[in-house]
Structures are given as C-alpha cells and as structure tokens.
Figure (cartoon, rainbow, N blue to C red):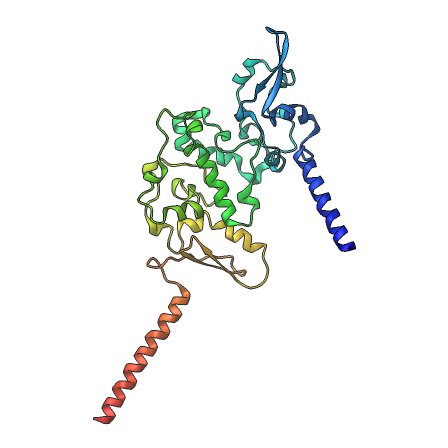
Amino acid sequence: MRFFACTLFLVILAGFLGVLNLNGQNIPEQNQACLKCHTSQAHTIYNDWTEKEEKRLMNPFYILDTIQLAVGVHQVFSCIDCHSMDYETYPHDGQLKLEPMMTCIDCHGGDPTYEDWQFDRIEEEFQKSVHYELHGDQFSCSKCHSQHYYRATARTSSDLREIVDYSNKMCLSCHDNMTKYQLVSEDAKPQLVDIHNWLPNQELHFRRVRCIECHTEVQDSLMVSHNILRKEHATKNCVECHSANSMLQASLYKYQNLRVRTETGENSQKSILGLFTVKNTQEDFSNEYYVIGASRIPYLNTIFALIFFATLGGIVVHTIIRIIKK
C-alpha cells in the first residue's frame, strides 16, 4: 500500500512539473507578457472605432509552441533581444512587420566565442548555394532554422534517425508546404514523389537519409554542408553512396563516429537504410559501408570462402577417388 502511495505521489508530482514547464517555467520571465498572446488562439484588443474590447483570432503563424521554445537553443533569450523594443507597446505598430529580421551571422559572425561552430564558414558556403543565388539576402537562416525552436540535433543527438528526421523536416517545411514555398518562389509546389521517381526504395530513403546528402557539396571540415546545389547537380549515382569510402561516410555517418567516441565496450553493428551493414570500432572510429552488388560484405566473404573451399575440396576428393578406382 505504501509503495502504491509513493508511486501515485511521484506520478502527480511529474504531472505538476510538466504543467509548470508548459506554462513557461524554462522561459525567461520577461517573455511572459509576449507569450500571453503568442501562445493563444485569440487575443483581446481595444477597438477605438467601437470603443469596445474585442477578441480577435491570432495569426496561426505567430502562435508559438512553448514546449519547443523551452528546448530550443535560444530559450534563455528575451524576445526583444532579436525583435524591436517597440514591440513592448501593445497594440503593436503595424510598421514593425517591416522590421528587417536578424540573421544568425548578426550575432555569431566574427565572434571567437562561437569559433568552434564555424558560423563564418557556414555563411561562406551558404552564399554559394542555389538559395542565395536566387534570393540573395532575402533568403535568411530563418527560412530553414527557426530562431524560436532550433536545436543543434546534429551535434547533440546520438540517434542517427533523429538527426535525419530533424534535418529533412527543415527541407520539407518549405518544399512540401505550399504556403511557405510561395514566400520564395512563384512556381507551383514541386511534386517531390514525381521528381524523385528515379530513386529506388524512395520512401525508405526519405526516412533514413537526409536530403542534403544528395543536394549539397560535401565539406569534410564542416559538420553540415550548407552549399545547396541546383537540382540538376544533385547526386543520382547510387554507387557514390552505397560503397566503401562513400559520400555518406563523409557526411551523414560522421555522426556515427561521434557517437562511437562516447561509447565503451565491444564493437557495435547497426543496420542503416535497411541495406547497409555498418561496422564501428573503438580503436580507429572507422566505418565501412556496404550494399549488396556494390562492395564486399565481410560476413558474406567468410561464407563464400567456406563454400568455395568446400566445393574445391569436394572436387579434389572426388577426383582422387575416381583416379584410385580407375
């Protein structure tokens, strides 16, 4: 009975703490006034024409998710660190919507504090990309990386699938969303399935491989490549990925090495993409990537060797017996 009571208390306590978190426990107090409106479906405004307070629906694009906000890298920032201090006045001046948005490089560029993150190198690579080529400074970091919710998943996660899912959702948030896509293009939304109809196991690739593996120029010295290539320059040669010393080894699977460095014990094996055998070793942190038909698989090598020598031995024994009988 006492055990049951303790368990019930812990469950209630966990729920209570969860509610506190939902109410912005991890969000700076100075942001509560902003979030009072920007986490609600409606807001109240005084109408000078009718001289009454009225409730209006909030623009859905301005409604923030406090859970994602509380785990994002900018969770400790005040809203006016990035937005104009004029937003402290409510109702907001409509002209504030024309305020130029800050970019990552405005804060992180040229600052030795963030040298390890190589923001300046990333900016250089991004300025070579098709996004910058077509849209210039109008295509800012926030088109892909939400300042409110961004998490450095590629650096912090030990789950390769989580890294892939998080990265691909950035691309799909525009390329599979007509509303956001039309912010940067007059064209109709691309039909991703039709465009990628040449790709075998298309759904599996979408789940297990990041878009940027085929659509960027790989830079070994950067954690994530930001030079997005034109679609006609995208990789379509299967062997470039499905072989030893492949593009995937230089890009996506570098995270496997990072994870192995934090592990102890025996070698681990993971199934990647449903097609690969990945062998990680503690000694050299090296990975070997294979696909049937493109490269050798160590276990199959052993099996084939046994079959070969068994067959050869059988032929030799059979030949000897034939000679003896003759």
